[in-house]
Each structure stands twice: as structure tokens, then as C-alpha cells.
Length: 363
Image (cartoon, rainbow, N blue to C red):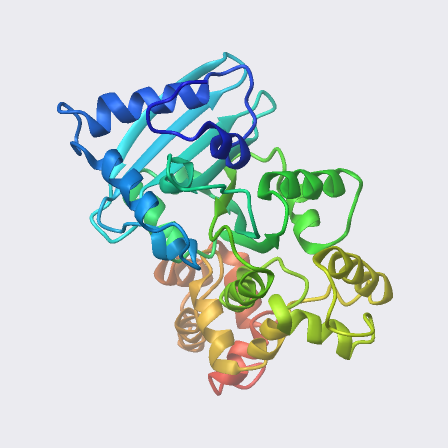
């Protein structure tokens, strides 16, 4: 396939396989018409990105090769049932690499969006499939609340409605994802597979796959994963800590004999860990430590959309002491319903919050 800007080999490796649609040709033509050429919004910008690719070959980290001053965001939405495609673009007024968003609407109602830095797909990058690839798969709930690109960006930065799985692979990130889907279908009880299965087909849920670093060494990829798993907070779906910290965890629990093992052996070890401790649910031990911290607990409780904040709990109890009717308390504090308020008043729920607020049970 002859293209002006895109490297077909890298596109084939990094983008979803959609053989019935001329995706690469379509995007290439859009880059020329709407972005790069004289009548485009960023005249010459794609040519500049290709020159950037050529000038930075050999750098250790892919992220150091990306330009952050061209906030181009291109969205391609493909509807499989009707074989139609829509291409749009927008601009972010922040430092961010140009990215391609490919959303696929399947006939069964599932919506999957993959996000790839545009430079990985352009000519001059080199072999994007060499080395290790790093990625984050997310399950985004309550997506009807997203009305604009600004809303989307806020969700990406901080949301209690999203759940994330961080991973690395020495093969191809999409092939690895297809393996996760196969394990989901076979009934795997690992956290990520169970979450995929539970949310699959639900309305108001999107599945999002975002490609991070590529062309990394094993050591650099493990370090990347360790940092990003630690950042997940309560929204994480990883069974163990990331990177070398996870290998030490498996070794401490006598699942592996040493920490010098391959990613394939690590995957088998995680399954074995779950087999030995099925009732524990295997929470991320980093999160388990955080959860013991009262202030972290209060912060999380305060960020959950359907959960009462500590201040709401305090207000409910104080208003109940003053004889305010339950229905009035519900409206005043913005609780979900009267039942939620009654449970707080009688001490059936939010006991830990009450303790941390210095409110004894039954008061």
C-alpha cells in the first residue's frame, strides 16, 4: 500500500485489525487534507513529525522522541455493522503528543477505543514492533457523562469511574490483549479478566486500550510497569505489584524460585498464586498497605460518586441528633435515597468513617 505519511507496517502492528475498512489509507488522506496541507489546521505539521522521527532514531525512550507542542488529536469511529467510518479531529491546549484514537462499535453493543501516539505510525520511526511495548487497558463506566473532549481529558486525569490494568509485553500489545480476551471467555478469575467479563456488553461502558512506551529493553519496560502500577490507586486491576517489585513479591510468597524469570513464567506464577489463595482476591499489596491508612481511606471514600463523603456522614448524624426527618436529611446532604441515610444513622454502614470522625457507634 502506497502512503504519503503513514508507515503501513507499523500501522498493521499497532492498530486494531479491521480488514474490511481501508483504515490506513483513510487516515493518511485525512492527515494530508485536514492537518498538513495548506488548507489544513496545522500546515506542515505531519512533515515536521516525520522529520522528528528521523532525527531521533536511536534514543533510548520512545517518549523522548515525541513532540509535545502539536496537540493534534484525531478520532476515527468505525461502526462494524454498517461498515461506516467517521473521522474527526480536535486540539488540546496542553502539552501532549499527537494521538490517534480508533473507536470501534461492534454489533453486540461493545465499544472499544485504542489510543496510539501518532508518531509511532508515521514514516521515519523505525520498527515499532521491536523490543517491549507498554500499555494500559481501561474499563470506563458512566460514559454518558462525557459530553466533550474536555470531559474526556478530565476522566483520563482523575476518575473513580475508570478501572485500569497496566501491562508490558515483548511481543505485540494487541496480540497480548487478544490473549486476555480468550482467558476472559474461558472463565479466568484473575482480576482483569473477571472485570472484563462482568462489564462486557453493559450499556454506558467503554473499553479503552492506550499504548505507552515502545521499543524498550526488558529492564526499562519492567521499571515503567512498576511505576505505573503503583499509580493506579483503588482503580487498579493488576494482581501483584508491577515490574521487579512484583517478581520480588512472587518470590517472597514462594511462587517462583528466583526473580530472574521471563514474562511468560511470571504470568503462570500469577495464576498459581491465585490458585493457592483464591479467597483472598489478591488485591494489589501496595494498595492493601495504603488502605490501612485512615487518611487514604477517607480520600478514596470522598472521591467515589455514589459513596457518602466523611462530611456527608457527619452532617447526617448531626441532623439526626437534632431531630431532622430522614427525607429532609437525604435532600440536604444529597444522599442517594432515604435507605442510605437510615443505614448511617443506625450505624449499619460507614462504621470506619464514624470512628475516624470520632463519632461513637449508636450516637
